[in-house]
Image 1: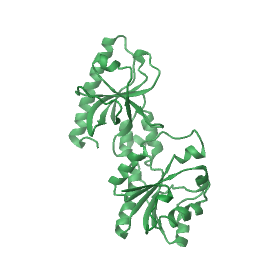
Image 2 (image 1 turned 30 degrees about the vertical axis):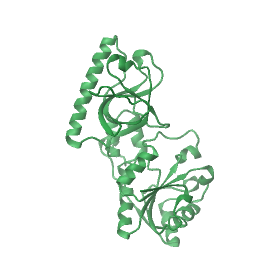
Image 3 (image 1 turned 90 degrees about the vertical axis):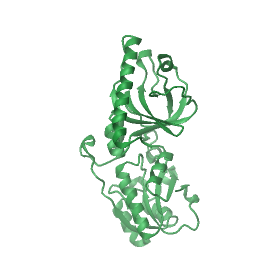
Image 4 (image 1 turned 180 degrees about the horizontal axis):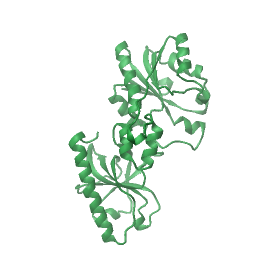
Length: 322
């Protein structure tokens, strides 16, 4: 998959293409429907498919300080889009100047002059241009002038976790924030992932016999509610079953919120300085402070046992996440 940053990166000889535009944070199942349809149409027409997205999130430019928690960094979104068969990813730097483009100017500058769109595939609630004034109806209206077709993909409705709401990044962020990582996974189509570099912490887990990877998460990451979770630690090309702790470590009067993953039954891991990923499969229990270190150790042992059981049950059906 080709990756471009800015309109100037698009090849000068780029021909017609099928395009879809959106933030696509998380590349959840609703996004997968839209992107998948764009890929299918591109193959039918014998042209490449292009996803257009933005960096930073438009809300951070339009309303500074309102950046939503991110479900996936851009490199992870690119991996997921490549798996869906996307031919090219265009990341547009979203600046104050860019935010002032009218819907018509956006269409001409991006879709017509640079990507030579033949078909544009979007969800029903797609908005674009200055103050989000453009919608799919206006996009289709401009298509009659600029020789492209617009196809609207209706999003499926989520199950019990979302209470019947359409698949959305907003709903997924809410579920993650509540610690409902299983509900979030239902929308994402995979476990929620947090990434970052392993840094040195207080090393209390090592002293207790449960050494953890202390993950310094990427800025604006959507982090689950405080508690213990079952999941996987991805490092050095391997997905290792893990018990994951999120919180301030109240047992030792901690104040800084951390994400720490204990790789179950693994000995001698040295991950300091490595970029790793943590997948959250299931909530095990809430954060707690115990009466003694012995009680804490007993709880940790139970956490590891429960995490192992949950992971083994999942892997028996679905295998390990990539």
